[in-house]
Image 1 (cartoon, rainbow, N blue to C red):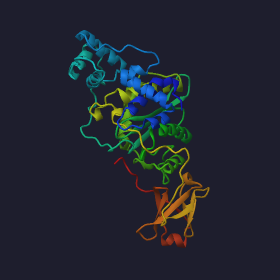
Image 2: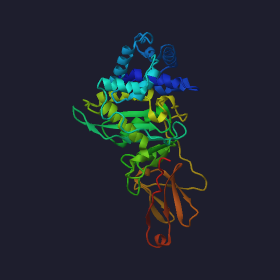
Image 3: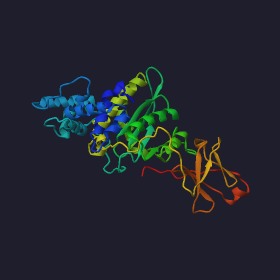
Image 4: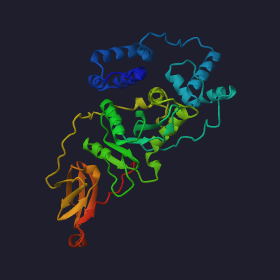
Length: 395
């Protein structure tokens, strides 16, 4: 997969930062990013020698760090604020430190500089970060996925931003400007993310289309495909967006730093803006929940490589296997069990539980529901519905 022209610098920066992590497999990264090993080593060498500016197609002189007077540093603060108008004193100070500025003032001093020059607004300082947060122990233990609310573009049509976030590091794995929220669109974007970053252990989504349904059968073709890849699926409780709190917070940041008071002509322009900001978010923007570290400092690519062919489903010897019909039904013990259209043509596993006449239903490694062959069903009803299992929240 070649570098995308609209975001070649951001692609290069993401590549070299991931390649700089201790223990990184450079050959595997080159394969996932679609570049030769020669090119990968070239960008890494330039990055080590000159930092981000070394990745540009044409050489640029680095900023001179010494000999700056206080007025010059104040102007640097104001320039950085204009580049990131939603950042407050703490984030600006951390970014200046990361940029190796000399004599960086305290965050309170930077805030006073902003106030003195009329660059503070009512939004600054609103909503202090929580003291205690939950996060998974390692990268790729859990990815959160959602669509942010869609918006119209000046040349017509609507943009549906698809966001995928790593729970442990808050690293943005994908921010895509989509023209719809269909299964095929999401699957295409996920394949690109999986090829670059590998597979997560689990993904958390809400109950909306195309990955959920608030009804009795929540499984969709998209979530069945993810399970086939070996990814466990969790859905949040209906009407509880806080279950995906990190992705919801990411959406608020996206709105404040990219979408607010701004319009876009089409999807291409929107995607360019998304690519540029995603790189800033991952590699430059200090994150309050990470003690002002940047997300990429904590993210590691997954060792689980995306398979270009779906793996075969195998079941344990104690599991009885039935194939779902075109109506999403399996036959078991003289009854028809409605499994759901998501599993049409797929092998379904059925295993007895410790409770009499109660059976658990599996698709691959994932338990997808259960049914009860009670006496009344055996005597009268010949078609039973599979009941859903309790949702697994972000625990």
